[in-house]
Length: 158
Image 1 (cartoon, rainbow, N blue to C red):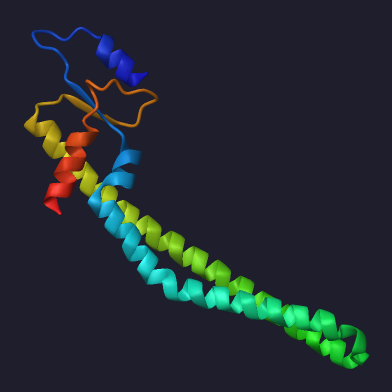
Image 2 (cartoon, rainbow, N blue to C red):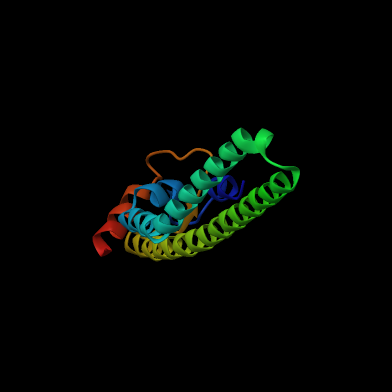
């Protein structure tokens, strides 16, 4: 509504220059965002593989217990059930920790990309004498969309 109000206002002696940026496209298509995604994948790949291995071991132990449970003594069955529960709890704990660490790092990397994008947006706005640049809109007319210029500026600076 702010953009509509600003666009509809009469500006004396000059027209209001407005540019719009699609931040989602920048986060998907810029080289710096792609590099950040690759960095995160590399950073967490070892822990993800460890979790996958742990899940497979837990499944194998559970399957083995299911097969052997009818022939086990009650005390052995209880001990093995406790071991499975403990393994499952450990797996879930590590899974939560990984997810939390990944979210934290993703937010850090995302923040760096957004800060870089904002600097480039400001450079483009100053160079092309925009009065107002907005991020995100329901609809962006191609004439007002400066996303390609921002992407070019971000990718050139890398």
